[in-house]
Image 1: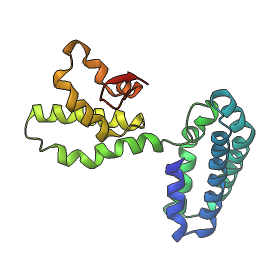
Image 2 (image 1 turned 180 degrees about the horizontal axis):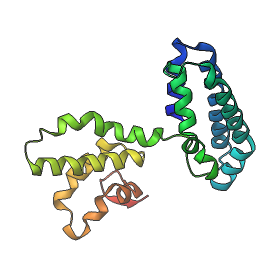
Image 3 (image 1 turned 60 degrees about the horizontal axis):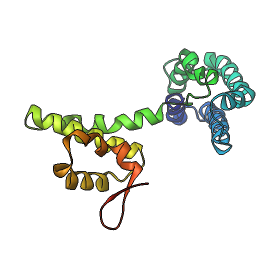
Image 4 (image 1 turned 180 degrees about the vertical axis):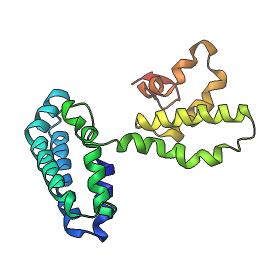
Length: 192
């Protein structure tokens, strides 16, 4: 949905009225998602809310787009936005069928942004071993962030302890188990 929204947003310079109508409709869809989040709805309960509220909005959007499509030039920004939205309608409305699906894929795209931005830098790690080391560190940092941990604090502790930690228990130093433990004032591990 975020891609469809972006196309209508960019079309404001050429067709303010139609793009504003679409942005308002899409805002209503995100309002339903916000309501589900505020109410703590998951799975089937969120699906039921979407079917109750979002489906009606989506039906109105489709009707509006089909009615307006002949009124705009196909190659205009709004014409292309309408064509994109209608061509991807099945994918855009798929989230109605499963309460565990997000309305958009912004989270996934955000998590891949670092890969896309850093790709050129990674060509110059110097060796295959340097690349493998960078991949391991990147994975540890990404996992730390996903677990809402401070990656710097985690890596600092990991590097301080890894050389004296028994090799047979290295899995204890991975981010998930590490998070479950806390450092006491003396630096000893205690279960959290």
